[in-house]
Length: 189
Image (cartoon, rainbow, N blue to C red; front, side, top):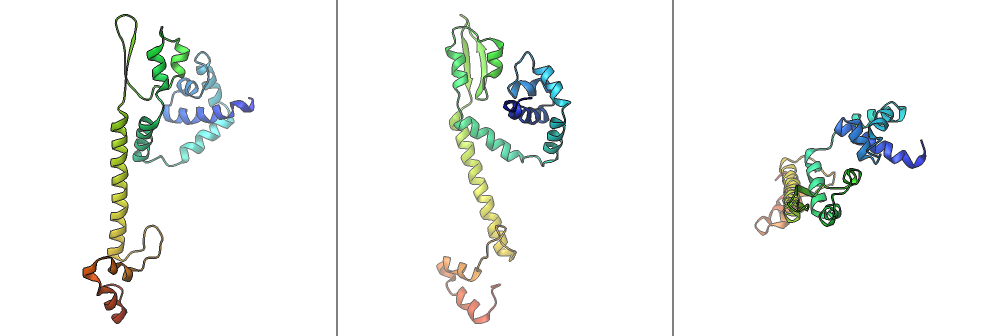
């Protein structure tokens, strides 16, 4: 196999692991629809694919939140150009072209009277709002973890050295805290 197909083989392995369907994985990896099934079955028999699949399967799965964030990011910031191609096409494109279109942003496709196509897209603004919510909850979780760590006296989960005596100066009503620590030599106050 030539070097220009190397990325297709790895991509095929990634899709095969996710989908469990050799023909669909081969199509998504860039092989033609006519040869996808034969190519997929042939690739599964190669040492490269067996090794790559074993390596990929041994990796821990991505956390669900990471997958959701990736999908929302794609909806919020990705291109919907392929969906626009469907809307502005005079005739329905051939199956080969349809198979190669990125229709991730499409929530609904409908043929309308007169031969046109109605395409509904997912709401970008709602995807951005959800991303913002998830970012806020991640920031809140990190802040809560740092606070609990400080209160329990356990090491900072981020590995940074923290001088809690200086933290007292953040709140005016606890300004005397640093003085008490200096007098007693006890930083657990």
